[in-house]
Every structure is written in structure tokens, then in C-alpha cells.
Amino acid sequence: RFDVVEGHGYGANFEYGFVEAGLNTGLLYIKIPNQTQSDGDFIGHHSWALRADWASTPELSFSGEYIYQSRYSGTHPKGWFLKGAYRWNDTGWTPELSYRYAHFDGDDLSTNANEEFATIAYGFTDYGTWYQGEITGNYPLGNNNLKSHMVRLQLFPNDKITVNTIYYNFTLDQPNIFGDPVGTTDWGDEVNLMLDYSINNHWSLSGVFSWLVPGEAARNWTGGDKTWVYGMIYVSFSL
Image (tube, rainbow, N blue to C red; front, side, top):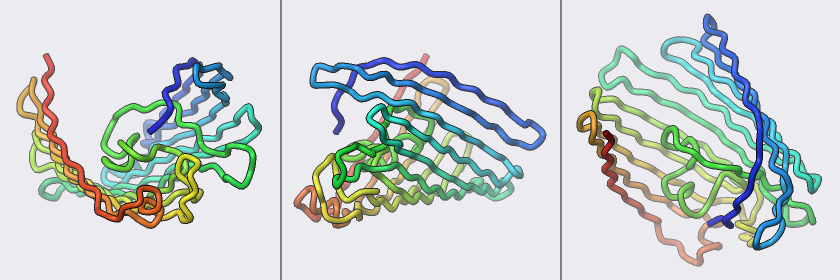
């Protein structure tokens, strides 16, 4: 999916919490210098990120982040998201319903410059946080040239089981995929079903089933129109 790039960078992170207001804020700076790779030069950038998490009540919460990049090539890509969530704490299975919109700039092929948001590195904190879609985010696309609407329902039947249902609507910011024109920005709709079971203090089990109904952009890129289906069972052991 991506070219393998080995490089270096540095940065700083500052966080401050307003405890009584239930608000946590953060400011991040990262510098990735220009670097020569085995397959060519990698153009570096500066990134500034401002983020906030606010628990306005025990049930209602909001979060968001805005990232501004300044590439040494002269372009200024942006990425951001806004999310709201509500949890019914006094209801059986403690359901939580959330909505998130995320946007990452893409490259306009009509210009000589590259305006695409530069994804630096991935991690994992929760489903849908870094990898948007068990199919879309894990395989064909990344966090650039992408716009997504996410609706998520999370259930907690007991202290050992967590159930997630996530719906995504994906569109491209620019009508191309890795520089290949596709004529439209409609990538598709994806549904993810996940169940996590903590068996005991050492063993855990996760099951995932997902499907993606490809939009016109995905069909033009792949040359096919069948629904994409994905499943996974993951067992982990820790001491």
C-alpha cells in the first residue's frame, strides 16, 4: 500500500488538563527533515497539532484535533477530525453512540506540487482511531486523501465482553488513488462488527467481520464491483 520509508525526526508534546471542567488539551510539534532514501529523496515537513478532549457530563463527551503541515516543497496540507459521543450509563449493556467526521487533504493532480497530507506513523488505541475501517484503513487506503463519516455503537454486556458496530462512509478528497485518476471521489460504504472477550488475566479473544460496498472510485480503480468481505479471529496471551 505504501512505500517503505526509514527515516528520522523529532518533536515535542505538551499537555494540560482543566480537571474541574473535564477538559484535556494537547499541543504537538514534529519535524521530519529532508532525507535521501534508497528509492529517491523523501521531502520532509513540519507538523503542528492542536487537540482537545472534553467530558462535558458523565454521559456526553467531545473530542477533536487539527493538524497543519508545512512541507519543504512549499505546500501546506491539513488533517482534522471532530467527534461526539453519548453513553447511557444507567441502561443495560451501557450503550455508547458516537459520530466522527475526519478529513485528510489529497493531492491535486492538476498542479506540480504535492498537497497530500503526510501520514507519519500509526499506532493502536481503539478500533477506528488510526485505521479507519478494517478493510479500507488496513489495506487499500491510509490517512491521506480521505474524508470519512463514522457512526459507532459500542455495547458492554459485562466486564469481559465488548461489542462494536461501526459504519463508515468514505469519499476521497481528490479524485485519484496514489496518483491514478479514478474520475470520482466516491470510495464506498463499510460496516465493521467486532467482539472482544477477555477470557481471564492472560488470554483474550477478538473476532472481526467486515464488508465494504465499493463506490465508483473503488470500482474504477480495481476494475471490479463485488462487495469486499473480511474476517479475522485473534487470540492473544500475556503474562
